Image (cartoon, rainbow over all chains, first blue to last red; front, side, top):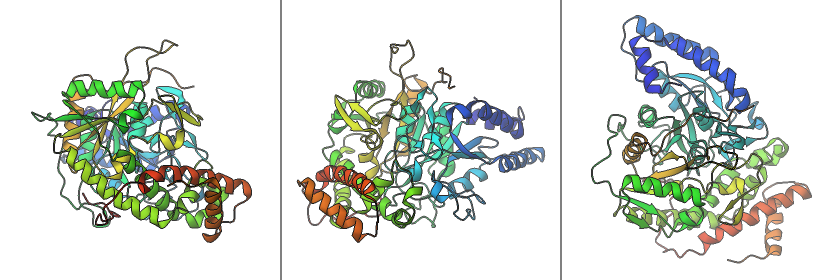
Length: 468
Length: 62
C-alpha cells in the first residue's frame, strides 16, 4: 500500500484520482478484512462523495489540501454525522445518531482525507486486547491467532495490514501505544490537551487523549499536524495554535536521550528490554534514569480510570448490566465503588508524579521505555507472563504506558522487530518502544522516530502470515 | 494498607447496595474479585507520602 504522502502527491499530480484510490482501498478491505475484523462499519457513500469532491477540485484547477484523497478510518468512538457512535458497545446501538462529525474528523475532511469507516475496539475503550464480545476479536495481521492489542486494536491492525495508511484512535491508559506495539506500526499519543476530543465518546475525562496511527513517520506527522489546533468546545484542550512537525523532522543536534529503568525494566520481558536497548543505541542514549514514582503513577491512573469510567456508566450498568461487555462490566462496577478518598489521593499523586517527571527532563530531552511488557499474546489468553510472574492480561498490558499517560506526556511508539525466528521458523513478533518527551514536545518524539525509521532501526513490515 | 478478605467483601456488598446495584451472587463475586485487584494496586497510591500542599490535578494542564 502506498503511503498517505505518496497518495496525496499522486492525486495532486493526476497520476491517480481520489476515486481510484478509494476503489483500491475498498478492494483491499473486501479481500482482507473478513479475516482480520478491523472494521465494524463502513461509510462508502460518504467516502465516494468525499473522493468525488477532491477530484472535482482538481478538475477545476484548485490547489488541493494536504491529505487530498487519502483514505483513513477511525476508532468506533468518533462521532460521524448521521451515525450512532457505538464505542464498541451493543448497549449503545439505539443511541441518537451524531448530529455532526467529531472535531478530528472535521479537520481531516477539510484536509481532503476520505473516511472509509469505523474500527473495532474494546467496549467503551476499557481493555487492552480488542476482544470485543459483540463485534468479535480483531486479529493481529502479523499473527492472526494473536490479539491486535487495544483498545484501539482495529485502528492499529488496519494500518499494519495495509488496509488504510492512517487511522485515528484514542489513548486513556495506553490504547494507542499498546496496539501500536503489538501490531508493529507507528503511533502517537500527544500531550494531554493537545488534540480536541470534541465528539469522541468519553471514557475517563481526566486521562482521555486523541491519538493516531500510520505506517510511516512522515504520514504520522502529516496526520498529527492536521489534527492540531484550539477547540473551545473541549474544556481540556490546550487552546494552542498548531505547531507543525512534518516539515521539521530532522533529529535535533545534541538530543539528550535517557532510558527509563526500575518499573520499566521490572515489567518488561527480554524482547521488550532488548528493543529499548536497540533504540537507545541508535539514538545515542547516555543515561539510565529511574522514575521512582512510576508505580504510584500507574496505580493513580488505575484508580482514576476505575472511578471515572465506573461513574460514567453507572446508570447503564444498574439498568442494563446484561447488555454490557462481559469482559469489562464487572471492572467498571468495581471502579464505581472506589472510595472518594482514594480517588482524591490519586489526583494529588498525579501532580507529584508530574513534578518528578519534569525533574527527569532537566537532564534529557527524550526518555525511552518499552510500550508493552510482552509481544502479542494469543487471543483468549487470560494471563501474560512477565519475567516469571503471571498477570491478568486485560488489565496488565498497559503496565508500562499507564504511568506516562497519567501525567499527560507526549509519546511516539515505534516498532522494533527482534532478530531471529520462532521455533516454527517465522519472524518474531514486533514490540514497540515509547519515545517520551516533555509536555508539548511532540516534535522531539517524531523527529527521533523519523531518524529511527530512516536508519532502519524501526519500521513497519508487510504481514507475511496470511489470516484465514 | 492491608485489607483482609472479609473487610473487602463487606465493603463491596454494602457499596453495591448503596450505589443501587442489584446483582446476583455470581456477578457480585465477580465484582468483588475486580475490587480486590483494584485495592491491591491502590496500595501504591495510599502508601505514598504526599505533602498536604500537593494540590489535586483533576483536569491536567501541562
